[in-house]
Length: 71
Image 1 (cartoon, one colour):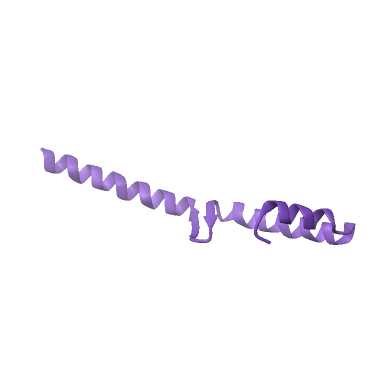
Image 2 (cartoon, rainbow, N blue to C red):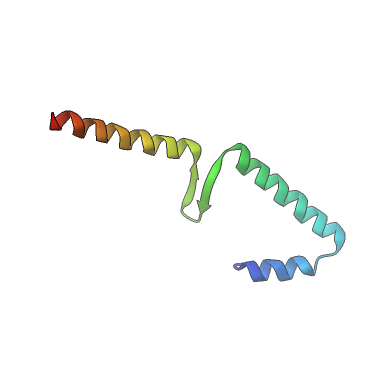
């Protein structure tokens, strides 16, 4: 299923017991993502809080070096 509309259509057709299983799985997956602090994820990978902090550190270090060179 590649689109939200297809997923919604499939969910609408599910009997209650299968819908509960989809809900359980979805809640579990969201809980895992929240626990791992993912901010973004797609086919190219995920970005976590750790990734964002590392990128910010690298940017601040680069700025610090530029400031030191300018003195």
